[in-house]
Length: 186
Image (tube, helix red, strand yellow):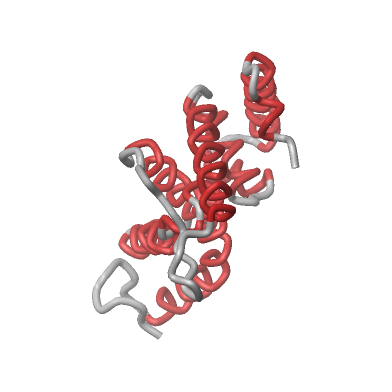
């Protein structure tokens, strides 16, 4: 089954291998993007872009030890870039299709989630690249340490070190934020 008319996969075996990767990683890529940009900011397009890039590079990527982690890393980077560069939204409301009016509870919830996502992006931006990649792949992408190590081309022990140090820095940032406890309130 050919997913795109042109691209990197040139033989049927390559197409089948890519199809398997696509089926396995698509839900995880969408979920990782949704955790960063939210459901209303088209996480599917970010996952599709990452998979398009994977398909374009498929002849070399198919030999990568963890192509799914590669796709998730690209998806997460695209999502972080989108949040980082998007203009501040004003007057965002949720329209209740049954009544035609704005739902104040949904608007407040959406606003709170937007603030949390922006805080997450800002906190991750403070981490060194390797720590940010490891933390994002593990906790946003749901990758296991072995796949993260293969994606980053480091040992699993190095991944554990990056995760530990990254989480320590995130905790330190939260400890210095006087409103951090509000994010944990139900």
